[in-house]
Length: 97
Image 1 (tube, one colour):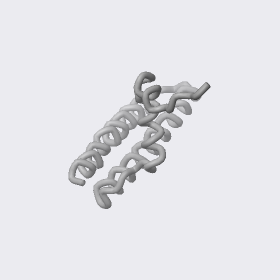
Image 2 (spheres, rainbow, N blue to C red; image 1 turned 45 degrees about the horizontal axis):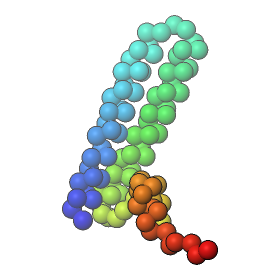
Image 3 (cartoon, rainbow, N blue to C red; image 1 turned 30 degrees about the vertical axis):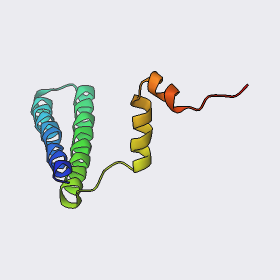
């Protein structure tokens, strides 16, 4: 339970990095005269802000509740995809001829 909350706190690190990068992009945008490049910069900044908002929200949810962020079925599917092929073959029943 405590480890899950620590992982929730660790989600704030990339969100803070996204905000720092977006600040520097905004500083650079003010010095650019080309309109197309300026618009592209604003789009990138907007996407970074949306991403950081999502990470902050998920991190706060994880810290407050301590619940898993993934549905158990998704965790099971990811576990199955990560298992080596040899382990998967051992779990399958043998076919009768």
